[in-house]
Image (cartoon, rainbow, N blue to C red; front, side, top):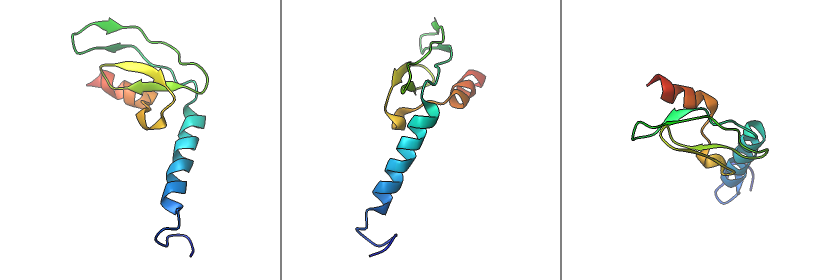
Length: 81
C-alpha cells in the first residue's frame, strides 16, 4: 500500500506533522489584550516557551494544544470586530 491508500496512516501522519509544525512556529506566542464578554479589559501577557495563546476572543490562556492555538493575527481580528 502506498500513500493515499485506505488504512495507510497518511492522514494521521499529516495531522501530526501540522500539529508539530504549529507548535514549533507558535512557541512563545503572546496573548494580546482583550475585552471579555462582561466588557472587562484584560492586559496582554506572554506565554512560556513551547506554549502559546489559546482560547477565544473573550477568554485567553496559555496552553500546549495546537488545536486551540489563537494566533496573534486572529487576536487582532477580534480587536477589529
